[in-house]
Amino acid sequence: MKLKISLLLAVCLCLYLTSCKSPSGPSDTSTTTSVSLPKSGDWTASTAFGSFDFTVNSSSTYITKINFNFSNWKGRSGSVSVSKDPGWAISNRTFKIETSIMSDQWTIDGTFETNGNKASGNWKAVIGSQTETGTWQSSPKS
Image (cartoon, rainbow, N blue to C red; front, side, top):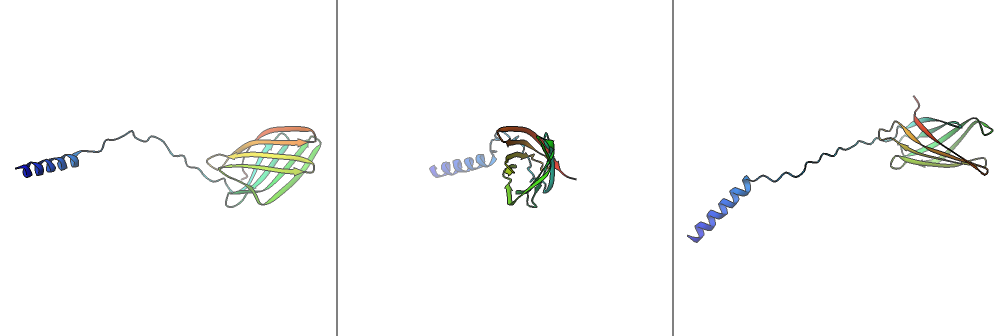
C-alpha cells in the first residue's frame, strides 16, 4: 500500500510538472542597433580654415591620408597633404589625427555615425602661441 501511494504521488507530481508552463519573465523590449563600418574612400569636411579631405582605407580601419585646403586663413592658402602608413586608427567608430604642418600642430578628432555615412568632430590648430579650434561635419565624396 505504501508503495502504491508513493508511486501515485510520483505520477501526479510528474503530470503536474509537465503541465506547468515556465513563468514568463519580463519580455526583452530592448532593440539592437546595427553598426556599420565607416564607408571606405574619400571624405570631405568644410571648416573655418577652408576644408580638409581624408581617405578611409578599404577595410575601414585606418585613415591613410589627410589633405588640408587653406582658404586665406591666418595667412595660409593652398593645400598640404599628409599620409601615414598604415594610417591613423579607426577604433569604435572614432579616430584622432595628430600631425605637424611646418611648425603648426594640428589635431582632428572625429566619430563616424553608426550608419557609417557621416562623421563629425573637432579640430585644433596650435599656430605659434595661438590656439584655434572649431567643429566639422563630413560625408563621403560622391
